[in-house]
Image (cartoon, rainbow, N blue to C red; front, top):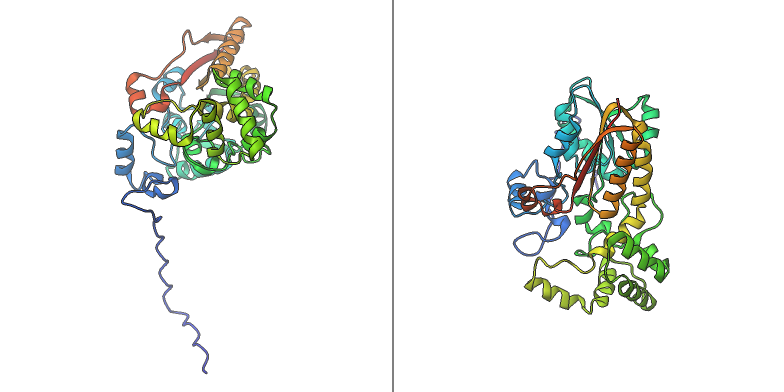
Length: 365
């Protein structure tokens, strides 16, 4: 049998196969990975607008909160050095870049390396005028980055302490009590302990304390006892496993809760506080915030401004006390008199803005 003829050198390259869109049952995609139009708002802006008009966040994206108020409080100038310590989808960073000129610099941080790289590609495609450097590190590493960059400080520092919509909405990240996925909750995948590890090993008393102190859970003792009882029967390895255990503490089954949700779609999920407490523990969020707040005055140039957007009472108290202590010590010469909240209009268009609290401070000159 003759061998196949060798391809001609001048033969045209075969056309690349067109990627197929995700397949899904029914007329509309429901799972996170199926919503390919929402994942690509630049290509499908009408779909993103449709989702936003319904008060929701398009899958795989994030809607920045209090952008106008952040810019007003921090007043970035065209030649400033700005550190965005929680890059996320890049909403606030885009607003900063719009204010920066060729002499300005943006230091972009995110401990979630895949998110940093995805946002880097999107922002670099837009061709920002300012120089941008990218840092896949925790925001408390700001002093180390400044030393490595040879900078004496920043003119603007901003930190958005909330978990991003990209993380919450992706079931594979394990942050959501609404979607089944591995019980993970690590913002930085380099961390060793997952939420499943903590749920399996924490003593009941420690669970109760975390629920009370980190999430203001009024039924902390009952929820901790329910988690310990559930893990004695079988390991809690998925978000649904944990949600089911918490629901049991409220006298509910998963099916009973779903039925109630259909009757009361705005009812708060009983597991929301438990998931919040575990997420804070897994990522050492309060410890990291304390380290950042202690270092901030020494990372700001004279007259430099810092803004912190928090979503939890424990975080906000720390920011408030640190800024006031810095004011009394003469490190800051001005701090926000009152917390800045999202307007009713912003909350209506983005319900995730409701708990946000913005505080700012200015380094003494």
